[in-house]
Image (cartoon, rainbow, N blue to C red; front, side):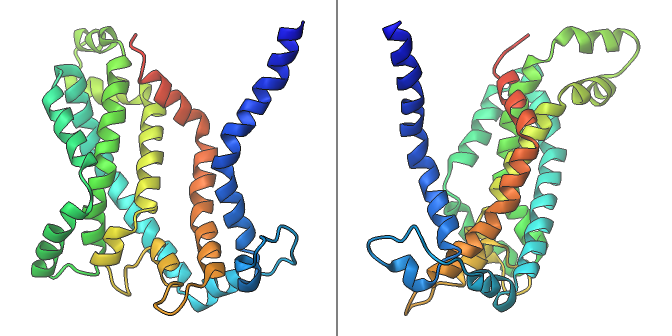
Length: 271
């Protein structure tokens, strides 16, 4: 009885100890988005304050936020679509033909710091006249999305029984037909997972947009950077822009949460 009581009290307490350090920065950011600059930098911190929408007015009126939103959508959707087009067949090939070296090379490309690709991209795109274009940003963001798609889907394809594919081939289907008609429909949770994660990584990327884009194609993370100057940092604007940027990603994750969990767990189990 005492052990059961300790568990009922101790387990929630342990969960709170783990969760609070992760949630607190997001709560602080959300509260700061509705504070004035004086309230944000005040010490001790103010948890009771009069909310204001001034910071959000700066984001949507003083900054070209809707243009940044449109650019982020175009770049994110374009890079993820091309990554799926290239990554799904590549992941299927890795899973069915056990091309471990290829998967390791793709992982190495994902683990390499993005700045190591930045200078070659800058030279190539500037020579081709593609600076400040969607093409340059989409191609650079494929470096982020493609490895995610390949690694998630190669594990997921390995969990799909080979017998289902062989049965389709016995009935006269080619390997390509079996892949499109049988494997892909069975792999929808994995595809949704890969799409969601790779889109979020592209959505939050700052470095490529900062260097390869200019006024016409800047994406949402640049909206945060615009509130920072040499003289001061407008923390209210930074927090409001961060909240506005994170909200679509959070909504997307919540909508597809069931598929993401299923895709990640099924990819870890064969059969």
